[in-house]
View 1: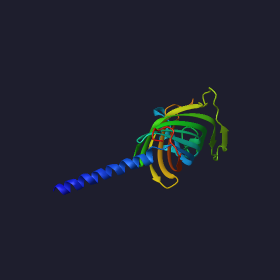
View 2: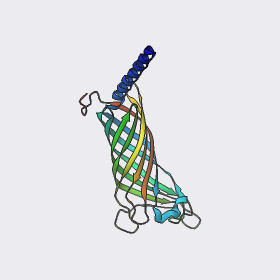
View 3: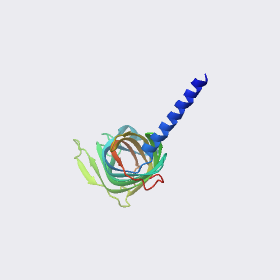
View 4: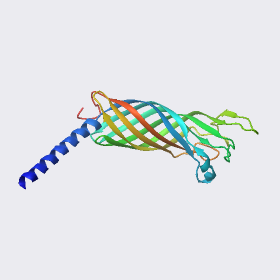
Length: 227
């Protein structure tokens, strides 16, 4: 019985050492990653526009930029990203706003600042983002009674105008697949806009981003005492 107990203790000790090594290998790193992904976006139209809910359709957008992870401790890092992203949303035909099928697109620069918690190869993300809308366009398909139209969005203080700035929260999780010279990250992220970006009907950005990224750690970590 004593030998069995000693064996269990030995196995537990080996498991803890392996877990500790795993955490230090995959978490305590500073990484720079290029971003090139598709995103799924839509709008939340607020409680006052509940009749639009059945007409909503996801918008397929594009994200291009870079990500920087500063490894602080074996369990914690800080993630900063800067990227260009296209957001927006579709409305199906017969909707109460544009009547015909329409697509609203926003061209945006976005800056998230996220806390990243690591447990082995798994991590979670949570933090705020700020975004600036550079431009946008509303395209409405034609019908037998009205022609197709496409117009640039106005960012003036008018009833049909839009706002430049947006802020919100991002949350998600990911998994790291380590290789010899680089790692592949599977990252799932949800963005929840908190500001109404439209001066007419309410519009709040909603984005779901599922991405596969190639990430290469720096040779030395300037943010950790372990280097």
